[in-house]
Length: 129
Image 1 (cartoon, rainbow, N blue to C red):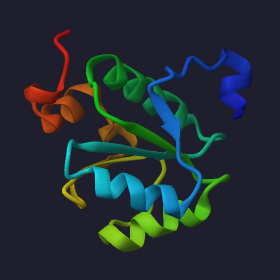
Image 2 (image 1 turned 180 degrees about the horizontal axis):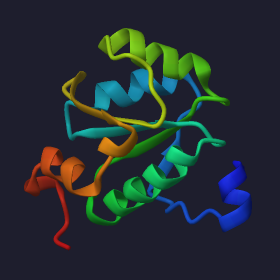
Image 3 (image 1 turned 30 degrees about the vertical axis):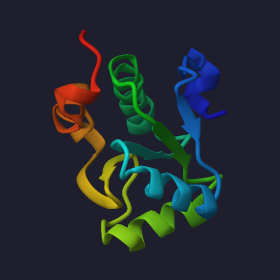
């Protein structure tokens, strides 16, 4: 549990699953051929991560697909694998959308916004507001 979760409490929806292994990442990337996958990397002690996590939670309220949380302090190897595989510089917080095994969208810090993520996920896979 991060500093901000200890202060404000964690309200992470159950639809956001923690990813702890490269094996799970490989499985998830294979599944991205069926539907888009959202990867959310963050630090559990970073103020920017605290605020972007609220945006990801809002996405989970509107998106029926999988959202995976990678806490870099607990899964550094997963974070490094994502950066290397997709040739996307590691930042935290960071959101990456994967479709058919390819990163189709990524944002970090203040660019992590519910509206932008849902737009990229397409209306066909999102629930109405």
